[in-house]
Length: 365
Image 1: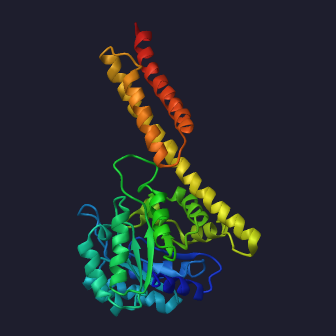
Image 2: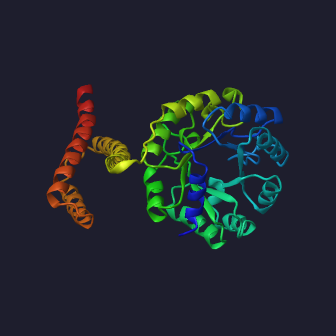
Image 3: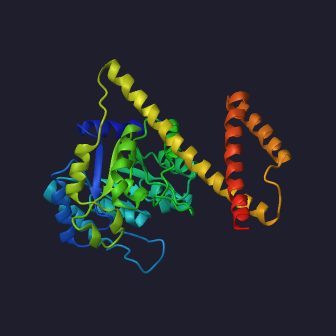
């Protein structure tokens, strides 16, 4: 849709020599804290100051933000540093207050994106505005919810739209606080190729030591910007302390990140090739992770067979799987020969896992 190009034009008009960098504390805590961080960020590549004003937490009892008072601190930081400002809004009242305090960019949080009712309320409050609105992915990995939120703002004639990829919640324990599920963001890009895409590595990581790698992957996938939580004293932040970095760390990180420039046919070719290869790397990582999960289930099956004295090889079950996967492969333009090679290898590894479990019992006798 044409609306998406307006925000991209705005990004280009800022004449940045690097992707957009939004930075600031998870939560606005005190006026002194907001101003101190803003002045330290002024010496970095960050051009937009972020701070959570309203912070509804997953469970009550934790710090939930200073409320509207913090908007005055953002306004003062903007006056003193010249940085643009952004904060999260979760209802029409938040929108009104943010507009009254000249907040430049509003973002819709992951907990809001899951609710079409909340999204519609915010979209109606911003109907026809030129205000920049960034929509975070929903908490759960549901592309339709994310697309639906974007479409509701389009329908409200909100012209300057972008999206923020902050990862997805999962019950499974991984190295991330929120699994990135890169493919979902890639699918969104395919649906809306002109829609600016920003990474929130802080919420994906949940810890500061892997933020750099996430940012580099995003840049390799041609993301338009980064939103990084920063605090001058991260360990003592009032919320999400483990995932915040200092402005000095942010400054060095933006220096170390490799950013590809599009100049000339040869460079353009290399850039496109690098992007496609990064997409393959993302999918390869997902394949390994899924194979690992499959073998854990094979281990559980092996244990069940051991307890019930059942043979490891079940030929009927194996033939059913193979036949089904050959048909599935055909639908995805994968040859029967390829499917046979892959699944024979997977099956053999599964047998090895189960055999190891049964052999352990024999060694005990």
